[in-house]
Length: 195
Image (cartoon, rainbow, N blue to C red; front, side, top):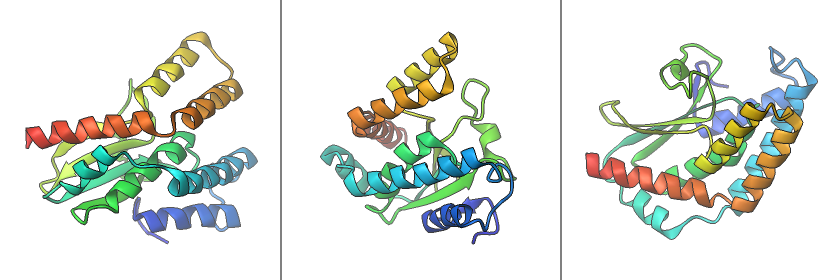
């Protein structure tokens, strides 16, 4: 188990296992609802890892990265949007040895999320891509633009949380990761031009 708030992908998966086995019982994982979120998120994450079909243009763009980058994913195991989005970033990182993919736990100090707020909130997942000098190339998150628009509509209309979860899950299932891949492709192209 990792001793800091920065984990490898494998350590992040171990975190899920530790929570689900009862080895981690600190808040919020002392609540049944959070344990259920973690269990469901692990299942969804595993499904995306097996079934996600990568866009050929995105594969080509990622394989063309010729300088070291670190891709930080700020998240927590209870985060439903992370279960749908982080598998893509992990799979892409596996395509190029210049990409170092790291998970940063949002709720464990030091709090990297404080520098990457979304509308003033600590929404996750948040992806921060940096070059070898630790300069930000781009950020992404907490969800694809269309899903974020849905979410903002939920907040505006006070949509019940359970209804929000169902609608967002349906959106992710229908979209099959296509919007996310297109957004990442455009961000990578923009970062390439800026270098």
